[in-house]
Length: 480
Image (cartoon, rainbow, N blue to C red; front, side, top):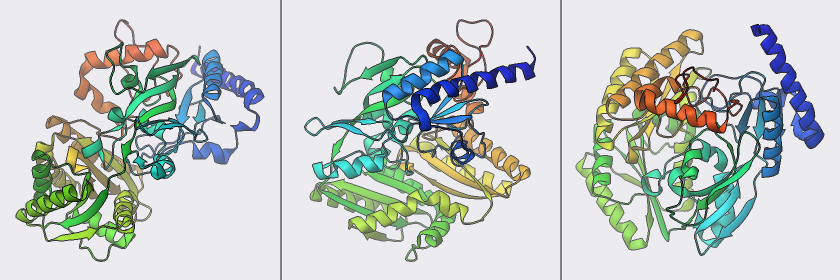
């Protein structure tokens, strides 16, 4: 079959699937250009493609029926939540359907005594926390944006509170997942541990929609702390800020959050978020939580270590309004960086190293940035060694080439120090080229075999996460 004939066949299959789904879902099957455009890309990575249609699911049954039809017609499906992913996860392939789960926002059950809940995948963490606050509970994983909890599971999200509470991997007890055929399975449960069978929950966490579509999540919850205090501390250089973080982590201080912003990012955030009382210097954002006496001890220890590392003093934020202002500024770092050069291309890279190597990584990255001639802001969840660079260049093919070249240098440095190409953004389309160096051919071939077993026709978010290559147990590469 010629390439043109294959394209015609694919187009016919997707048209047939859309018409079949329209009889089931009516106006929840949308083919207008503006809606398709909204579902053609995520954030940051400058890659987009229009899906043929957008299906709005409202239940697990809706997802099951959609996948059953798409499996029958071999039509690619890309699950879509809030569209805030950063590595091209939700960009559709050709002749694909975007399956939007953003209307699946129910809180199915909250078990206050057991500190867990079950929610639909389209619920955001902000909405969950607003609804359970009156019960004295909260969910701590905080990647910053308006992410859905299903999307956070799919990318194994982390965030500012991971240094104390862990990532999605540690906070998901079980899932409802729809497989490529439309079959519905449940993994895990409500118990904190189990010694039975394969850990299927962990298999789907971080699978980026390539093995199944997550529709419900059983989450761990935590009691709201009695006291919360936040602080900002500034340093004359990055080395002193990193050294402070390393010492705090090494003595086991239970800090809730510790975030680093370099002088470039602070300058941008001061202007964008109106932090006029601060200077454009390397800065640590802290948050402490617990009983009042425990928080006082954490604060005193942190302040003493920071001052030993040449800190210029602390700005405290004890009220909810002040803390919200500080953390909103941190979460708006990407948009602050974009404001440095309106109209420019800004790409966020993400890597992670053992915390003892963080200072070496940052020093090397700063040299790479200076040599590149590009502007960049550095920031990160330094309590667990997670590091980001917001790379800025003119919005052109040459600018994109220079950013990607610098990105490869940064990620290569992290991997050479025993790190990973992504601590939280995931792989998607943007990080595939680094996976063989990180995992090796054997592990990747086994991952491809798992993909082939669960999705033999390759309809679930094809082309994402796994680079092309050998499949364990097969002589020839398969279409994954």
